[in-house]
Amino acid sequence: MMDILLSGSVAYDYLMTFPGYFHEQILPERLKNISLSFLVESMTRQRGGTAPNIAYTLALLGEKPRLMAAVGEDFGDYRAWLEAQGVDTEWAKVIAGKFTASFFATTDQVNAQIASFYPGAMTHAAEISLRDVANRPNLVVISPDDPGAMKNRAAECRELGIPYLYDPSQQILRLEGDEIARDMDGAHFLFVNDYEFGLIVKKTGLSLAEMLEHVDIIVVTKGAEGAVIYADGKEIVVPVTPEERIVDPTGVGDAFRGGFLAAYARGWDWELCGQVGSLAAVYVLEQNGTQNHYYTREQFVKRFREHYDDGGKLNELMK
Image 1 (cartoon, one colour):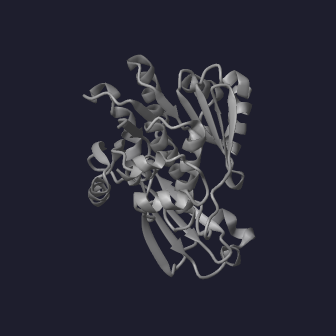
Image 2: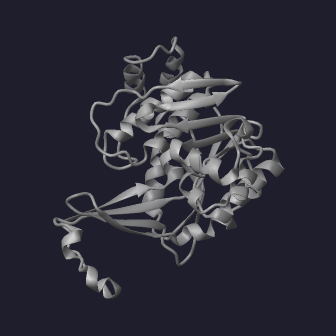
């Protein structure tokens, strides 16, 4: 079993619905003095954050991932839940006097949204060091987090000789081109979506071919168009797995990463890694929330074989 350590954000998502229309409450001539309060009709608190989202899928598929993140004093229930799923949270460091990062979003009847993000404990993520981890992982995933922490993780991985997956995604807007290029250099994987890939090209000035001189494998997800894997001098196109319904795309990319890495941990070929990631992603698409879906490994394999030929390799998942 591959020891995968997931570094990145951990957050609670507070999702509220307003039974009206924001635009009807806004007076354009008084925007300078705007003061509004919306009485919402529902609120849910969802577990979120890129690192635990990926970890959850890895755990569903039989891996034992480790989580490295800065969390708040309100993390207790979340920790217990992750541990119950098979995620090791030893390196989730509680920051005294802070709340876990939180996303507050209110959505109206036409899906217009007003939101706020509180980073909370995440601003202390750079205080956690890979050098303190007694058992060196086989792979570190560097996903969106405090920018200083992301920089430190990549530098430590290079220094300690630990392969790492660089997944800057939402933080690309905040990072400069030279910062992105610096932390891509020496990465084993680069994972981004199609739009993020375009931003990286624009910010760094690097072409795909030039990126592949610095990164071993690049995976670009393309929503309904599937994903493309650039590895070993090949371009491998992976179509999406047909969904039964579409409910909410939030967290789909994280689940893809979890499925891909679960297959990679078993030494499977790139196409099979992408197909496992594609199916893992669909389970999230069909539910609300990023960690509310569930399947047994037997159910996963059965559904996989309705669409793909694994040559019997997925039998390993059921052991």
